[in-house]
Length: 75
Image: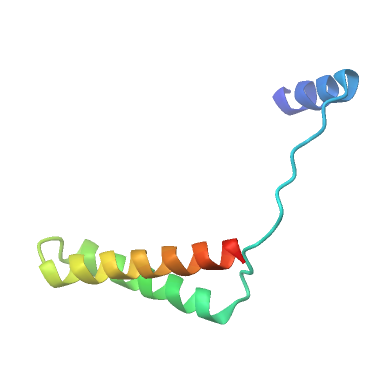
């Protein structure tokens, strides 16, 4: 009901829908590898929450992924 009301209101008032440009290529092998590394580090951290090495590895994986994604977005 909510979406129907929003769509109808947008058409009557003349509002345009916002469309974002796609910049993230999910098929990119490097990004998929970084995501998998982050997921595996996260799973390891969940299994051993007190392991400092696991915390450091997860933090490194997150920051590496974020830097790569921001670099791709800015290009």
